[in-house]
Length: 326
Image (cartoon, rainbow, N blue to C red):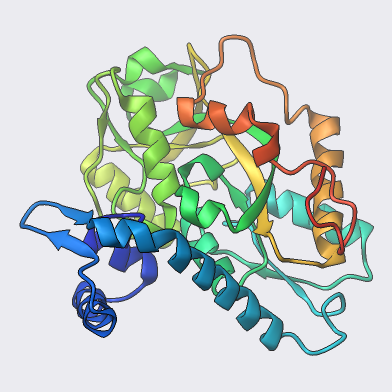
């Protein structure tokens, strides 16, 4: 709640009802004898006492989470248990990395999840239900980010998906300026992928591109196509996005928008599968130029700050006992 300062967003992020979150906060305030939040009809803010206690609360929660993860691990089996890896979808960067890691490290056991969104993946990592994921770290709040290690592995070029009968479908590449006046879908309303919607807001700002309003999560390629064509929305996505019926994928250009894809894992995690995944990402990146940025490319300022601060982004992963990859 202290990260979002918004009951609806915080409840969605925690996968609870808004009324449940409000009730639990009231009970906590009563138990502690402290008012932690000031609420009115439009805003939620931390009180001075809430701000004072917040660092201590974060340390306690981090310690509790680490203890819970240790208790769920069978003694002596930490390196032998399966590593749970979220790859978002079957065409993602994470899928390719996992496939190569499985090939090169056949003695390790990886369990595949497809959660489609780093925001949700981070919440599951905090709960100990997930070990590794891939995505845009800059879209994750600083609080949860502090419990994670992350290593930049790719600059992914973005594209726009358009209906086959749209005027832009005839272009081999679509200049960003050509999107002026269009409505761009970027999963607003799907709290699992809030980092992606945040990226789209930065891209659309100042370019006369409208972001599609919040919409319920869409599942299935046919339903996705029907919804986009019905609303005449274009879709912001990467070049590796799935095939969608009656829609075509076109690279964006002038400038080329990029998203910084990182491999992300829990800071306390000790498992040889982490190194296997990092090695696979490094191999693919070297072979295909994943860390090369085209001239005139574009990244949001928040992403540039993450990319340009190497101490925020883990480098080599030495093995299951490495504390902080150099």
